[in-house]
Length: 487
Image (cartoon, rainbow, N blue to C red; front, side, top):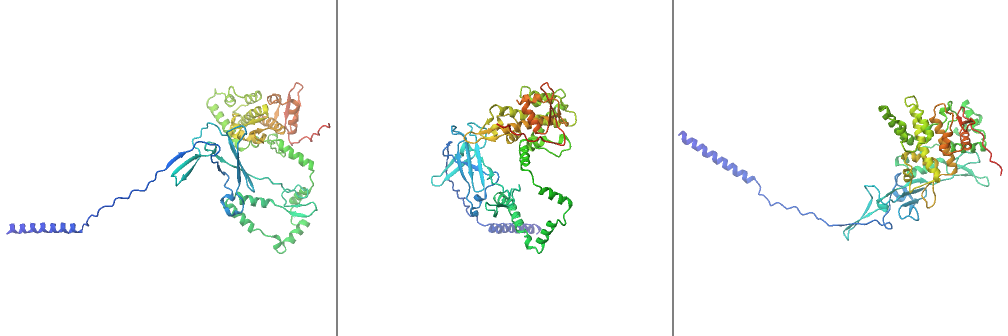
């Protein structure tokens, strides 16, 4: 009986398992045929690369200082700038100059157009033709050049009211004596912000304009203010003194002489209490050029401190390079371990670069080049220093020729800067027993050097042997203006 019961149990288990499998098979959905993905539509395009063609290549420009508002906003009411393209020189086939202007600004850029340059990226313009199914790749003008436009505001004539030397007063008088309102300095700032300022700056200016309070709209304020100014009530003694000094009439000749002196001499402090504070080499060189000079000198001095046998003077001037005798003597007299010697060495090195520029410009009076970078490269001096020297002592040539020229006044200005830099590099006492060797290096005779130094406030003494001792004392005094000889 037990065996038969076991067999019945096995058969029932098999039947249950089969029925369960059958139910699971019934639950499985019938597999539907899988859809094949439709192939993506592709289109074949022919790419054509056009060769360089100076007549038909498109000109690509950029606005580093921001796109003009007349281009961004068509509803501004102002016409967008119009541009013209021309060659740098009439006789040259390479090089291009782009100029343009609108109502408020002028735009200019140029490219040298060299035959072989080392650029790894160049600008190409792609034109896609749907009908022909072609993509035409055209290089921009001057072999893929992007002309970065230099933006400048058009010049305007400042307002000088009633001969009072007050510029930008906003009111002038016509021939009949009637007062007329002209553009004030605030209006000029408003125009600049509207043209070049960001949206945030424009909102600030609009809020400032809306918050202006008319003095006449305040009850009693206008009358009280006028009475106080008339009676000088509520004004401190210092302010009264400043108002009295400001009301004194200045001699126009003195004002003109002072303006001419500031134009020809390096920046000076007439109220300095020590001779070394009258002239500042960092102000003469400018921030960017001074930082570049400082990095070069500090690197040379650090290397010299590690290697005692190294000659830091040779490292600065080079073995066979430009070595003026006056500068070599000056550098050899400086002990780099003394306090303040690093500053003197920096001034002397900037002076060497200025003398190299002087020797180059003294030959012809001009430096030819398609751009400022080309002119600086021909001098073999740091770019930052070269840009500062061109800014101080040259003017861009007009006409078909490209380059920079030095006028007679700029040569005299260059001589004064060089002599002052030499005095600064000589020490804090601002005294030099003999400056004749430097005058020989820059080919400046004794008479002209005497005039330049005296105009800068220095005292000059001749020793009878052809030498000149120079010194500076405070308070700083300038000689009276020299009268021209009658013909």
